[in-house]
Image (cartoon, rainbow, N blue to C red):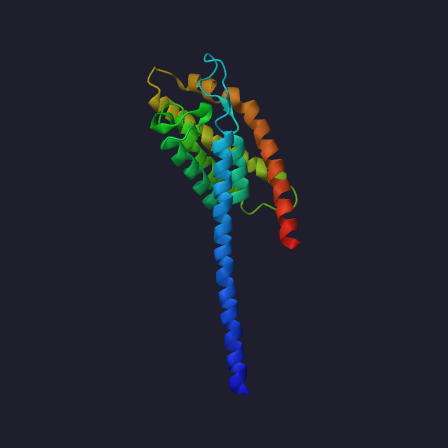
Length: 211
């Protein structure tokens, strides 16, 4: 009887170990699928650009930052960074996925490329700050605050890059006037909308998991 009991317990432990391993594998596949999906959305939607007059800004208005916010909220810092890195990699190797359907190293490392590379820092900050606040009360407010800080990091990196690469004697005030100030109203709206949408998607996901 004791041997039979021990054999049964060993079989149960083996099944549990196997089930845990299969669950981890499923989660890995699901995570990679979600990261690839956000990368695909960026590739499809980010190139569409509303260009401002050249006298106002050399940077256009896109859905790129909106999708970066969503990526940070939904995927967290690690997967979010992977998703954005894949997007940047696809653009660098020649796919026209950057603002205005630009691509290649010239777009990525040009005067405004810092705002593209800054997506990596932005999504990491947002994913990290919102990682433990995806449920409960005031989650939208916490998402908004995380996106505000992530956007500040994006602006900081992009503006410093612009000053270093742009070689026409531009000042900090000029860089801010061209690359930051015109976009504050638009990014503010994108922050709120992405936070609301991410909260709704999280609720739907939880309901599906429970169901």
